[in-house]
Length: 143
Ligand SMILES: C[S@@+](CC[C@H](N)C(=O)[O-])C[C@H]1O[C@@H](n2cnc3c(N)ncnc32)[C@H](O)[C@@H]1O
Image (tube, rainbow, N blue to C red):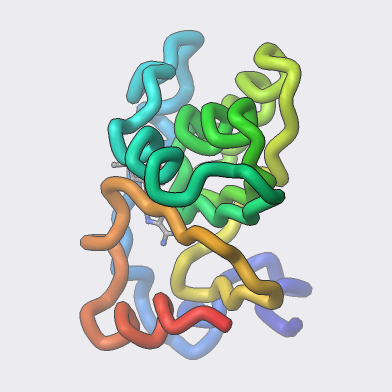
């Protein structure tokens, strides 16, 4: 709560330097989609392995500009997605709007984020290496 009031991360509050030096905000600050809008092949794997025959909740961690989150939402999943980059999140929202679908996009830092609800599928592409070794296991042990 203190970190949120001060608009900072828990790491900064405790005096740790953020381990992520990210220039993604800059990369995403264009009209084009930096990673394109073609979904990752893993999305098709998800559809094969866990087809959305009943409402399935997906969490996309480090969603970037949202291409995969939007694709999954368009295909019947209930999608929540977050990223450190505000610019990425805004572009994700625009993409969802353009595709007439909805994704619960928000800005968050992996190191601070703690899931408060159950997700059927945890999706994350190109992000794992940003998570500190010592918290990787704990992080993915979501409720
Ligand atoms: C290689 S990109 C992949 C983006 C997206 N998953 C995709 O495949 O298009 C890595 C993403 O991880 C995000 N990221 C890096 N560190 C993060 C952190 N601590 N918390 C949340 N997102 C983070 C970056 O902002 C960036 O959007």
